Amino acid sequence: MHNKKGFTVIEIIIVIAIIAILSAIILSNVASYVKKSRDAAIKSTMNQIRAEANKFYLADPNSQTFFAFCEQGSSCYNMTQEILENNGQQSIPGGGLSYFGSVNHFCMVSYLNEEVDGTNLFWCVDDSGFVGIVADFNYCGNNGTCE
Image (cartoon, rainbow, N blue to C red; front, top):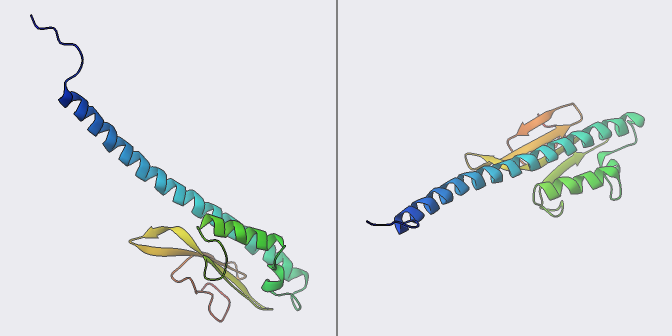
């Protein structure tokens, strides 16, 4: 009679392999969810900035510019810093946020963390009410709109 106590090496290796495969699947999904949650924060913050900028413009449309609205120390500036933290950038120069402002228009574009087929996505908001994905980080261009 042969008493078998414990597991064989093969059984232990199979269990470890199954655990490794499952943890790899879970970790890849977690990374994707983290990117999506950061992008949701970026989109939400940019929508807040768009709404506040519209109020700012309506208060005195002839003398206000987006740069005045978003100067250091303002709530807009603080929100732009929040966007930069969520898209992995530290500061606006050469970083992950671009904006255009004039007396008549404003436009803001941010990198998103998620990519499609290896291509970066960019989120744009402007004073015309456009909110959505655009093809280029410098999409605001000279006319100050996302479209």
